[in-house]
Length: 180
Ligand code: IMP
Image 1: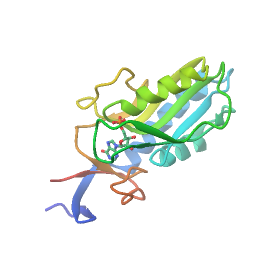
Image 2: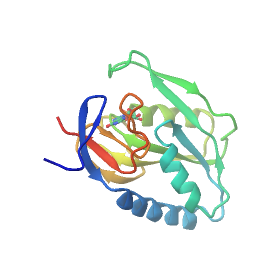
Image 3: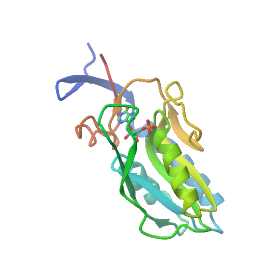
Image 4: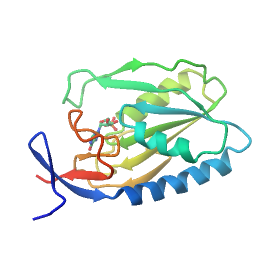
């Protein structure tokens, strides 16, 4: 019996990655960005809602004068993997000729990553990179894997640090995996 087991909407979740480990990885990535983008401010594009916590931590640590523009996507036909993506909140500023860094909570099948690469290229971004806190390599079937990521994880469903299960669990400070 795991003492840290928590229940969300009647399903059991157990700890996978601690908040301290997450913050350590994000600090390494922020330091790398601070070095690489010292001369050319990037546009950060966090993907709502899941990436809010990852972005908040990066924002706290970045010393380069970045711009920020949020996007939000949803799937038609919830639960189906074949459904198309709907851009609920598009970019509000031009990214033409800019260095863009998409900030994601997780890359799973890669559909969202592929969609955003095409969308940003269509809008004239000079370069698109994508940082994801989590990456499920065994599930990935897209064209654009994350440029960098915090942790490769098994194909389990996870919540916490911004990630949700039907809006539950976003508040959790670490990452928890479904234990069924
Ligand atoms: P994609 O399959 O890479 O396009 O991922 C689509 C979206 O599904 C992600 O941005 C997340 O919002 C969500 N997602 C995928 N895997 C998980 C998970 O394990 N927990 C919570 N959300 C997930």
